[in-house]
Image 1 (cartoon, rainbow, N blue to C red):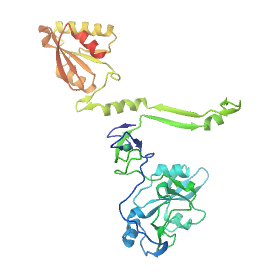
Image 2 (cartoon, helix red, strand yellow):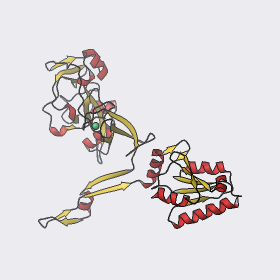
Image 3 (tube, rainbow, N blue to C red):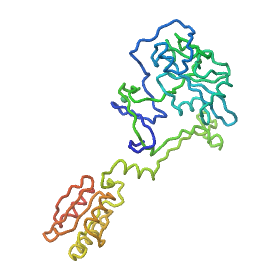
Image 4 (cartoon, helix red, strand yellow):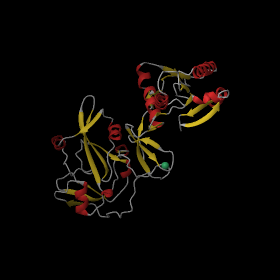
Amino acid sequence: MVLAENGEDDIVVCTKCDYAANVEAAKRAPKTTTIEPPVAKPAKFHTPGQNTIEAVGNYLHVDPFYTIKAVIKKAIYEDRSEIVVFFVRGCDNLQETKALNACKALELVDADAIEIVQAGLVPGYCGPIGLPENINFYIDKELENQENFVCGANEEDYHWVGVKMVNFKPARYCDLVEVQKGDCCAKCGGKLEITKGIEVGHIFQLGQKYSSAMNATFLDQNGKAQPFWMGCYGIGVSRLVAVMVEASHDEKGCIWNLQTAPYSVDIIISNTKDQESVAFATKLYEDLKQKGVEVLLDERNERFGFKMSDFELIGFPYAVVVGKGLKDGKVELVKRADLSKTVVQKDEILNKILEILE
Ligand SMILES: [Zn+2]
């Protein structure tokens, strides 16, 4: 991933260490709070009409941190679909890709009210305790063994208080939350930020799926045939070009570095009617080419300003301007990165360029 303001992916980055991850995979240190927990004995409470986290929190004077939010989805599989419930803290949001990975469905879609009721759930009062037996559900890992929660009682107008998250199978617990700005880094405890990025490369862990199917095997130390473990790696070459421009440009145009520039040097003849300029520039062009330098000669019959603008727009790393100064034995070397100009003796320009490019 390359950080870029116009990127299409949300990237979580740590402000203190080098941790960075796509929001779909980002982790955080478990969320904590300084708010006192609503300590209570487990009990079912009448909470008429309090069918949102905010409403029940206000009604019972409980911070959303100590509530459990149920996100009800319809999971689409190859041959069927089913209602799946994901439980996260009331102050958190479900990260859909993490949820998808948890239930291994092809797709997750919103469940409508009828489907929710048909599955035996009570909208607005869904909780992890007392769910209908056939309902598949997952709980965010951070809730494991935590206590003093308020959650829906799976009964209209009732919530449980004093809930302790124990006695669920370990497989129910998965990382489900979307990391938010201001959460703490799991690596160093620093504050996490969310920024934009562009994916330029990826790794897929294919495991043994394809090697098994294609019977591609090796012999292990016991002489037994085993399918290969496979991975694949890709770099998006064409989008890399866009990313490089995004990462290196100014208001005038692109700024290529020497490794990626189409040409390292652009020789601009200020006045193409001046024979001496044309002769000198052409000779320099040929000499540089001979030395293996990627060089372009701009001998178009255009105004100097026009050619200079093209140099700035396209963003070649260096330009040599052959202009009026040639009469005094001087040319100008322009560095695109900062547009700084250096006057160089015409006899020294070739070596100067070779020196810089080295
Ligand atoms: Zn960190």
